[in-house]
Length: 422
Image (tube, rainbow, N blue to C red; front, side, top):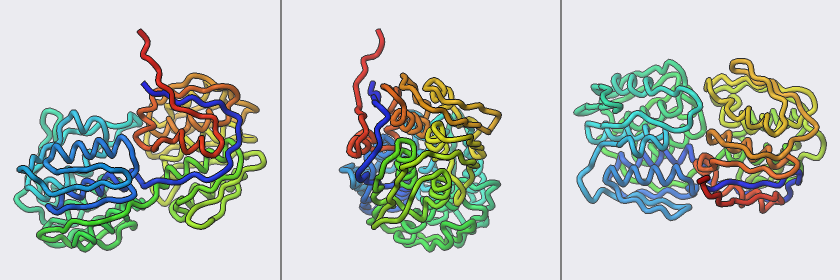
């Protein structure tokens, strides 16, 4: 099993490239199910989740060629099989995104209830409520969602709370529904806006993606597409936090400045220098880091996917930081591992109080989820001595060879192969 080994206390200097956004690529891959034609996705990151989605599309009957940074999805060469089995869906929660396209395109779908990172309950009830409003008959049996509808019909759907995958699933379903659909209280993330661009390329009419109200006029059929995926704002934010923790001067090339404004505001308040440079962000941290308070919120608030990385950076701050998690109830699983490295963190329900310490010490730590993995890598960059981050298969779900990118700017970091204990 792979692990990441880091020898810390080295500042970072140079340029780090940002890859395509995983959270944009996954729903767009699922959107290929809405058309029989050959679609091309460019600027796709080489991640485990991309491979998992490709495997799922193949199971559903599509031909998929993964040649990173491109993925080609060809028309079906065999009868469609509108069923997503547990063996595939359990590996990645985003697999539920095939539900809307399948029922819209084939009139039926059988999709396993999803798995993914264990960071708290993320129910699919909003997906099912929306599909029922579009005319689908839904039942849950033996761990599967079964949806059937001769033809979905446009309707107004109001989400009880903003949900990214729920919004995306219903957008794709509505793109093939008869008539007009209005989605209210939608997620506003840039990845949702990106899906709207792709559906428009396919021939649907999508207005308001990226706002809380999206209006979609469906079509009888949709066309294939050629699309380059936007840059990954969370990968970019992770590298900004790494510079904040370790110090140095790095150009994060391709970082989407506008999509990172909530993160940039907090990093500046903590003492970093951040400015646009070309197509990226120049990040400098030459002096000490000051404590900041952060509350996660749906976009355009501070993203929950950056909370763990900021916490790792705050472990060495001057003073105290208070981080409040409002999105997921179980997203402090990285705290015990950071404490093992010498961090001073107290948790109270959904709040973590971080008191800066003079030093962190390298240790053997265990990743529990994707962003927790990134936080432990950041802590390892600033810690004295050697840190080994285990279970990096979590990390590989969202970061393409992060150790190579960090090594290129001066980090002493490598991927190692560890033999399982006998």
